[in-house]
Amino acid sequence: MKFLTALLLLWICTISAQMPSIKKFGGFDSPPYLTPTFLPSSSVNINWNTARLESTVIAYDIIPALEETVRISGLASHHHIMLTNLLPGTDYYYKIVPYKEVYRFRTAPEFTDSVSFIVLGDTRSDSIKHQAVIDRIVQYDFDFLIHAGDLVVYGDDTDAWRKFFNIECPIISKVLFIPTIGNHERPYWQYDTLLALPGAEYYYSVNYGNCHIICLNTEMQLTGPQRNWLINDLIETRQNPLIDWIFVTLHRPPYSSGSHGSQMDVRNAWCSIFSRYGVDIVFCGHDHSYERTRPIDGVIYIICGGGGAPLYDVRKSEWTAYSEKTHHFCLVEIKRNRLELKAIKPDGMVFDSLVINKF
Image 1 (tube, rainbow, N blue to C red):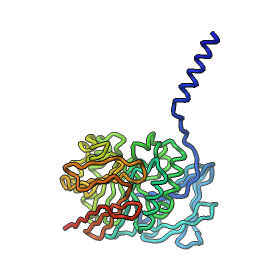
Image 2 (image 1 turned 180 degrees about the vertical axis):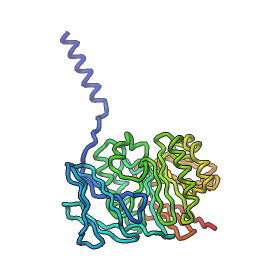
Image 3 (image 1 turned 135 degrees about the horizontal axis):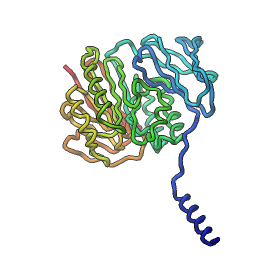
Image 4 (image 1 turned 90 degrees about the vertical axis):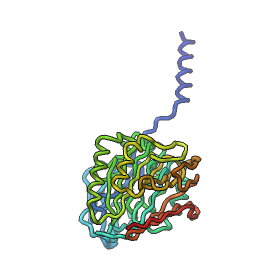
């Protein structure tokens, strides 16, 4: 019996050593980061995290004296405050109380037809490559940053989230961070815990100037409520005379020449809707490469999955305008009815570009 018991203990120890460790999501320290509300011209969400339970207090003002204060009762490790009744197109200073560092952001103008933004995706796994991409991005002036999903390698990895926010802090403490869920954010409740977003949060939309940005969720049911919401959102947007451009971001691409390939469930559920309601560009991730399609039923699809994750090979398909295996991000600049997109490597090289002129 003792011999059998010893064998059983040895077997248990061997199996335990082979099993991956179970990660435990908890508190961690991070700088603040800004996420959108329904009205980015007059409000903003400020988010941050602390390793210990602390008070949730923000001091802010249009002057560095920071004479206004907002406090949420109780103690927390993951903090969110929505500042409201802000002035459009105005610089605001803010800090987390009781810490000393002061940050600054600018609210969206009440309306503008000159907008610029950055798109990147798949920043997971390799913080060195992710840092190189961010180091290049900070050299540009732009209004907001869109992420196409797979922010981190595991949704329940506390250290991965800490690294992510610390790397991106120079950007997302100053401009709006507009994230999209990827498959690596699983099990997803941590994503929800860390990011205050408008509407249903797992999918949502926001207007900025003459642009409408829709963030969809390819990791939940594609039809049903989400598809119905998408159609209604696009119908409402097409009726808004101030919106000239419609962009969608989602993680799993409906058209891809990369290793994951085209995600047919996404294509079948949504692509006809994009065409019907005049979406201009759909930004995707998932494949760790760059690919831009020719217009497909009027819509351009761009895989922007080179934010830091290990790169994947990419081929060319009948729809491919350009593809390359490289770390990168996209810079989009809009002036009225003209759009210019540049795909840029961490060394600053522009390796692909696109110009769209409307009307």
